[in-house]
Amino acid sequence: MMERFAQSWELVKASWRVLQSDKELIVFPIISFIGSIIVGILFAIPFFGVGIVQSSSRFGDDGGVTVLGYIILFLFYIVLYSVIFFCNTALVGAAMIRMSGGDPTVSDGFAIASKKLNHIIAYAVISATVGTVLRAISERGGIIGQIASGIFGMAWNIVTFLVVPVLVIEDVGPVDAIKRSGALLKKTWGEQLIGGLGLGAVFGLLTVVLIFAVIGLFIIVAATESVALMGLIGVIGVLAFIVLGLVSSALSGIYQAAVYRHATGNDVSGFYDPALVAGAFKPKRG
Image (cartoon, rainbow, N blue to C red; front, side, top):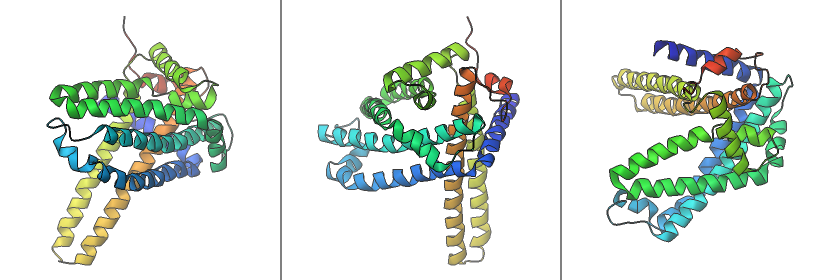
């Protein structure tokens, strides 16, 4: 376990070196975050109008969400995923340029994403369909539905791990990109994505540390009975969580680019040890 965590930390540091080389890569997660908030605000009224928010606690009991509710949820997923995938495509495209020895700009990343816009939207539709179905299974199927939804959701995330890099580099549509992503993972490392889980574990630990730090500061400041200071700590804490999430998102996109390059036989030694990237995945036995 400790060896796996140490390896994951090395992967984070290697991805961090790429981000340090092109600090503007953090712009893509920032825009994705802002865009996601805007999408959420725009769909807030329709969600209340069809009873999605009010019915959340009643899923599985009386089927509170109507067909119209699921249609609106489906549309929400399409718009949200389109924003996220567009920014991720821009991030991965820019990271690919850096790993190829270039010096990408934010405009370069968005130019790449713009050229793939039709494929990005089509992939968003596919992902929205999967997301809506899994949401319905989870909320209407009780414990068994939640377990099944979790398993299929995890499998979907693993199979589609390299979809964005494939869309960036290869001239294929979303369906072929999903097939290509699954084939690359199965061929090279098997089905268990240890590297991605490792990155999540590292940032999960950092999140826990940050939570305890904020709580500790609150306890100290509470003794002064200063509402202003407690408010300041709260604002700083929220901003720290946002920054941590943005950095995590940027590093994950960079790492996806490195994994794709390694899987397709391209050099990643400028920032990553190729053996480290290969060792981040559990080989399929048998």
